[in-house]
Length: 184
Image 1 (spheres, one colour):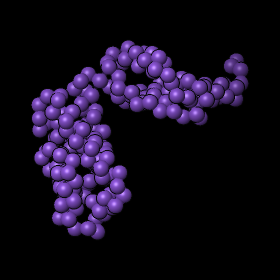
Image 2 (cartoon, one colour):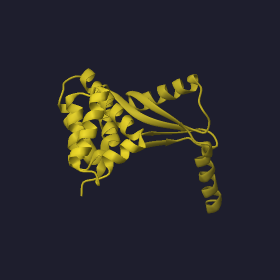
Image 3 (cartoon, helix red, strand yellow):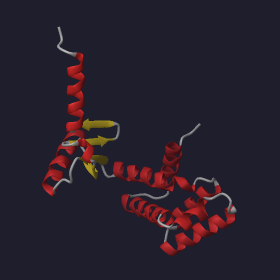
Image 4 (cartoon, helix red, strand yellow):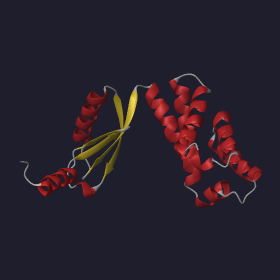
């Protein structure tokens, strides 16, 4: 069975193929993000378009009106209507993420998520961005997050690569070493 991620990537590739050039791709991405924000930001609207109890024709009409209100292109509005037809509108956020990855790849960028124990100042963020860019030999678009459980240090995830420099992990590794005892 095909997973939601694969389905979202297929739709994203189809949207990406509808136009040529980074400006058009970025516009489509912005429109998908705006439509997603509008739908997910309103619980009543979310229920109306995601609940199969409402007839498809009604759900498509609501999506069409929202897209019209937001000035969404015909291509993205039609994609959203297809998602309604297939009962897959809940994939809209994942579709946006997949489209973002395609736009990043086109621009020679990779996405990363950097989590730190405390908020980082601009200089620390710059240094981390530069180090990660050198590591992957590409421009890095970073999503910053804070997790006090890390105690200190940072954890960076770029695709499948995980770079863990957190104090929590270092303490866990030390604990494992102490449990094993001295090597003979």
